[in-house]
Amino acid sequence: MLISFEGIDGSGKTTQARYLAEALRAEGRDVLLTREPGGSPGAEEIRRLLVEGAGERWSPETECLLFTAARRDHLERSIRPALAEGRVVITDRFADSTRVYQGAARGDLRPMVDRLHTLMIGVEPDRTFVIDVEPATGLARGAARGGTEDRFESLGLQFQERLAEGFRALAAEYPDRVILIDGSGSPDQVAARVRAAL
Image 1 (tube, helix red, strand yellow):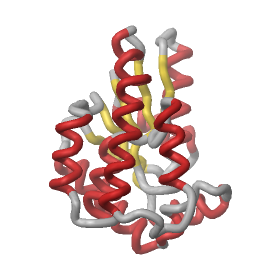
Image 2 (cartoon, rainbow, N blue to C red):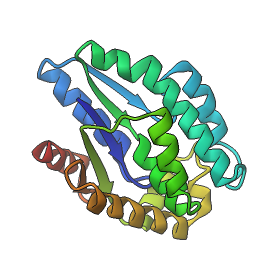
Image 3 (spheres, rainbow, N blue to C red):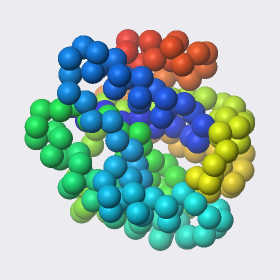
Image 4 (cartoon, rainbow, N blue to C red):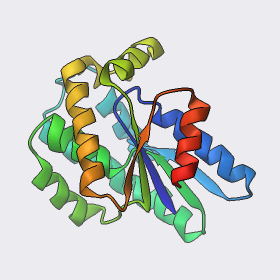
């Protein structure tokens, strides 16, 4: 299976991806835990260009091309080989992030995002879990985390609100694949909701 975790910045999706990977490994499954942008050497180089620096460093169109290039390398070098070996792949973000960030919140680019995805990626996760939290909560968590990977958080609360709306809309658009998970409560409580949904 290919399982993706999505959500706004600070939603807890990275923690939940790790929790699920650990739980499945404890059950004897072979799991690759990976992330986007990144997950392969070339994609990790592109990651630095995307998540560091000023919020308006790139246009939404350029971001979309960079994310697609990183995702293609990730798919070729990490995801497809792991799936071919029979492993479970859990990725912290995948194509739905581009659909929401560049396709809806940063610009009205969804048709371009979808065409690039069809041309260059052509793969959807078997299951996508959107960890749904209030935007102000996510933004506060991101600020508390610190670090240099804060380019999207720097775009502010209204941007995070547009992201949250976009992820909720995706759950309505793809009800057989995308599952909204209530992100409130402790990490263990959220993880229990993920397992129940899986």
